[in-house]
Image (cartoon, rainbow, N blue to C red):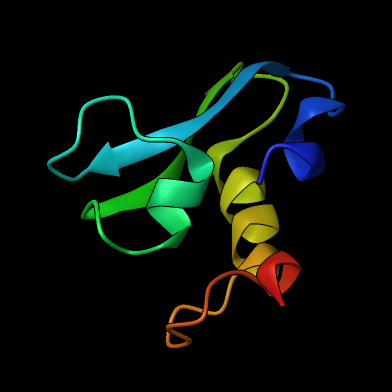
Length: 76
């Protein structure tokens, strides 16, 4: 989820990480094993005057399938 946003004008910072879960500082492999309770997350800092929120959502929804438990299209 980082690459679709990081080169866009108005995007200030993109940070990937994990949210929820019970293990402190899990690795990517641990999160993928589905034993930590974490989910992958992305934090995007943006200038809404240059990159409006609705455009952010348009790109986001092009990257995921919300009813697919197998993950993002990139995970396939």
